[in-house]
Image (cartoon, rainbow, N blue to C red; front, side):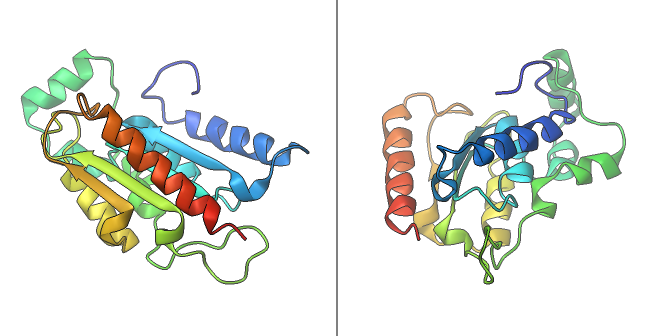
Length: 188
C-alpha cells in the first residue's frame, strides 16, 4: 500500500516502481508475483499490474475500473458523499480515462516477460464484486469481465453484503486461495 492520499492517482507511478523493484530482487521468482487490489486499490492495480510483464496473477475486488462510468453513474448525493469522505475525482474527463483500467485491458491477454504469445486473461485474472455495493456499482466489474473475456470460474459476484464483502470473508479467502493455487499450478 502506498502511503498518502488514497485518491491520488499519481501514486500509480509509485506502484509501478514498487512492482519493478520487487521483480528485480534476486530472491524473487518473477513467475510467482501476484497483486491483489481492493476498491480504488483494484483500480490502481489494474492500471499497473494488469499490463506489467512480471505480474503472473492479479486479483481485483470491488474496483471502479471505468472511472468515467463511475462518475457519470453517481447521483449528485453520491458524488457529494464521495467528496465529503475525501475522495477526489480528477476534474478533467481525459484524466479519468487515463486512470481507467478498462483502457489497459486486452481481450486476448498480455505477453508476460520472455513470452511471444499473450497469456490469456483466464490464466491470470480474477475479479470479485457485490451486487449491493453502495460504493462502486457492480456493473463496473461486469463491464470489465466482458472486456477481459473472463469465464465464470474467473470471477465471483456476491449477492449479499457491501463493498468490503462483510460477512463473506471466508468465501472471499477461499476464492482467492483457489485462484492463487490454480495460477501456481499452471506456472511455466
